[in-house]
Length: 329
Image (spheres, rainbow, N blue to C red):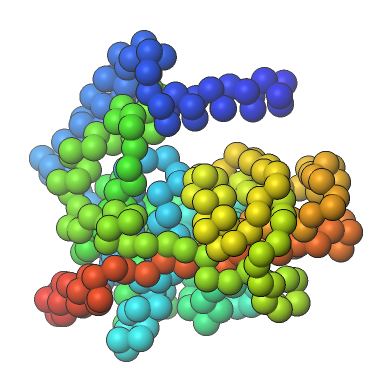
């Protein structure tokens, strides 16, 4: 059953990526989905439902597609930029797939278990150890917690662009290049492309406004490991091709690749032993925080790729955001 589910997911992901005949055959269901979304959105436009605003300012870094757009690295970079300019920041994350995702709660200090809090909160705590985190899909409750506990902070939300019950001050949209523009289920779009872009205050495109790259690779003790070297690449992220290309650009010769579905917990018992034993295993930091709980981690050489993004406009984007935030006062 698990194998059949995996094959089905691979077929769906291929359809989402490439489009083609299968996507067109499924497109009537996408039309129904779009109608449902527009009805949902119209309830707020007409005032039948009202979005809540328990905290200000709220900045949302979102996207229109399911996974793989690079929201979290952008959110981390944006949090660092705001801190450098003197802002206090609290991050809101969904905690996708974890028990903590059901409502919203303030994460404790110190390192976080990816199994309990989600891989993205665990990653953000690794990268930003002193930034408070609110984890959970209930974005309204997250904003209420921010208002009570972090009144003078900017609430920076990773995802939540389609969460209309919460009113946000600034909406930043990651706009990845995609071939298939259909909504679910024929494509990966959570809402129609043109309506989503109309709601955004700023679009960010990888390779244009924002650029990502691996800046270092380190071992479990934190020591830098310099290329060239051969390795097996393991990942469970939304854009594995981007990770593999970044490794090759950094000088790593990727001899084999193992791709798991996005957010996979990476706890399968034979996962590491099934990989070629003659090469070290290179993973993303997002996946490394999940591997830390494995009892067999010491049996393999694990290397971690530090992937970061930077804004390509020499500070103009952060200047724009700061002006937006100052205009709210």
